Image (cartoon, rainbow, N blue to C red):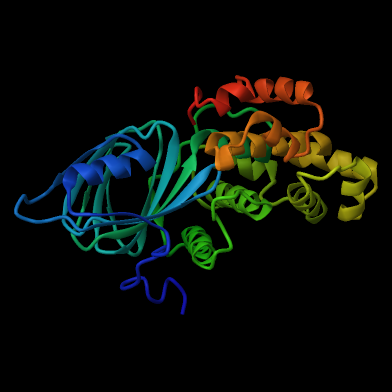
Length: 335
């Protein structure tokens, strides 16, 4: 049975519980830590909360199951740093965003843009799957997709018709990610190549399936999906971040000659294969230092992600992230 078949009764990501509480202040504080500061109120004071928040996260995204157990009003203002796709599993919600009021239910999701005010009212029966995607990451994927600088902020239509082909495909992808996470195959804490590919696929699904102010640019660019050889090359890169990888290795895995591979990467990614490899390694090191898994230090983060020269690693890291790896390791830079 699929998620769509039993959405009215199941609690998803129950093996990844984050919060169980009936306390309003605790709910506001805990949920705010994963999303943003917000105002949370119970619609009727005589009612009691029964909050259930389950959560898994990758490097640039998170997937959440959230149920408040009572009718609540939520005022996050502007989200600021992320987009938020809200897919109702049961109940209803009224969402005011971009000057319009949307009534969300099992047929209608909402996609909140980070630079627009939002207020919401969830019914007591309202349970949602929430896909949170970093604004900076989505913009980077969009820029690669169109092969040019973005003309401005990306703004999606707030109303997502889950019955339409685009809405249905996006919902199916989010649900597939939930099932993979529940099976222990995705977003389990140590970022893997498959996690990185899935996050890119999620960003591409939003950009290519849902209407936005850059849909016409994406359509002209005709980059909705990467060529098979380029995708195989990128898969190989992410699977071998720690290994000594030569350009010839990537070309051989993609079954392409080196010149064709280079041209293909420039067309699809705006970068050379080795630049993509270097940036993927830097991203992995950055996440490792941010997460401070096993008290990872700069040397460990560098060597475990394929860098053999600490000086070049520090230089490239600062160019990409705007600060040194030691600042990240010391917790002086937040995400």
